[in-house]
Image (cartoon, helix red, strand yellow):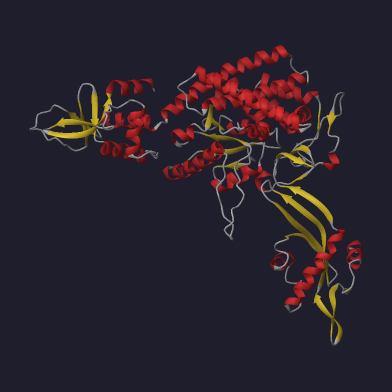
Length: 610
């Protein structure tokens, strides 16, 4: 307390005076000078903090002081915009801190506080992770690891490397559920070997672990993938029934960027879509998780599907929502900047477009090796994976970011690899959705960088690198082919035909014989059209309405209108078209009527293939 009082007394300068821990000001007028009391406390600026959240840079003042009763006022943060109105005073220091009556007293107090800034410490705090160029040098931002669980490090060994500028490392602070993110500043060869064992002796089947490894080591490249115009625009979706250890496995890979377990993952589907996307902006170039997509009933299904749709589109488009400030000026956009794993017991109903924005991995109980999983968890708790990621980002920095010309070469390398891998998969599967080759290309780049990193640290040989990359390519292509089939099934036309066949087979709708005698009722209950040997002739509005109703009863949504559906059916060449449009004129029960003519053989071929 004596130190604080000494600092306060040093601030006693004309026209201000400190008496008994109260602030006074001397004013001069025609009548002479007079000294009046300003407030019953003496504040000072402890530090001036620059806060960078990745979109906006703001100044924040850290204040402290002393009260008339001799107690030290706690340190508080006040934005420069809020300093003048003093609304913060009651909220942060309480009712005992009183400013004397009169607007001029507030003006004097504000002026006095600003005069104390000369001795204030200048700080910069970052509320965002990932790559940031600071004073001409690239830094990979992560909070420092706290002492305690998971902060232990290996005993120094030969070949150990550590940061040469730990004292000048940027100060990174994350709040709330993001506080488990933290980095390392030291590593040795054993850490890299442990990371390779995660790949070589995996805790789950190769078709699960290999894409997760590729995705993890792709993530720190996001900044430069964005600069190259090929940023990852998808999420990884890990599905499996309860008890398959989806969350445990996900926490293992998040441990490359912090201290995580299955019970403290950063986000879940119980959070709002807006909060998920806001947090995703702060988590730049790091991996995160949105846990537990599992609706308990139809009402919750609709809600979680909406959240999933928002998340898929945010990551799939990498664009933030446009927002206005109170003065109608445009706020900075805040799109997701890292990569995300979603876990769930079933896939969300997000349509063809949403499905194309995620890459699915199905985890089964027999896929998990509990012994290996336990070993990997111990390595994660010890911090081996965080130290490996530190080594990886330092390697990227040393090899590719030493100057602007090297950064440009990195962008060119990423762009060319992305183009090569994208084209290669497209030639392998030319009927796939256009987003799928880009997903494959990104994962191939992630795996290539991971293996190259290990090779240059002599953990594996060049031959090992080439063999493993080719094995991964084959595994990834097989997974991508399955994903392509899933995207195909989620096309509106495929959903329409599946549901329509289910309705007809269940007797919920009726398709009459086109050539039936006129004496029969032409429009019996459930009627939606007629048929002949080659075609179903549907009334488009009745058929669309029946399918939409069935989807709603099943807790799903049918995403397109009747008009858009007919257009899609025509584009897929599933219906007969004419020069005049996508419907045909059919003579039915003595009348000419217009129907959509669905080709039976093509529709049945589609149903059979699914």
